[in-house]
Length: 348
Image (cartoon, rainbow, N blue to C red):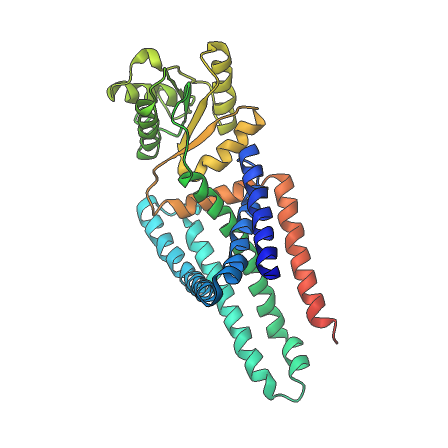
């Protein structure tokens, strides 16, 4: 009974902390780890409350997770080749391939260590021979590195997916569409078209007066602004021109939000704002919105499945390119390596 009570209280505290922080600000990076902690806290409770059934469920979920982890690198490698075939041989299109190879190398290093761990028991001094072996040190370093960064990326990915599946409000005063580059200088590409279609869907489901703000300036290789191209697309789809307000000066995501917010403040039509962008980009867009003090709901548009892994990896890199998160990621990595090697070799 005491175990059941303890696991319930622990689960309630973890879930409560995540819900509170999530509702307070969905763009905070700490939410990623709070959500994972909340999810993991459920398993001890299931184990305690479910008896044998709970234990079986927990073991099945653990085994399924292990199998999924083993499959992941092969999926990423295959996806990488598909991405290159469809989008071309640019570095940004090879990210899923690179991550898949990295994880596979880490898994091979881990298995190699496990095999030598078993065979080391036949040596005269198995512990010392095993852990002081140079090859094992390299394998351990590779394994720990891959596990650390893979888990970090996995935590980020789960939170990004969670942002897409949670229920969202349906009534907005403004819908901002985040721009993207044009084809042939004036045509809307599929990625941007999906964003506009999602905005149209939100607009038509809204029974209150709503304004759509296509946001995006004119690039050096474009004959019209992205906002103008989006406006033409919207009108072709039947959206009244009077419900469209152009923001055609921005050149970055941050400017998209900042300049659109200025329009909203001048128009003074209302305060409920939806920010529509590609589903992989919603989290980072919300972070920019927080920097601009714009309270909004992030809504993601459909992206081709083959494109999604590499795009999400780019988002992860962009988030950790920020000084604070780069320092935190590096500090955690160094601490993890230092603690692990200290625990292993302190006995010698």
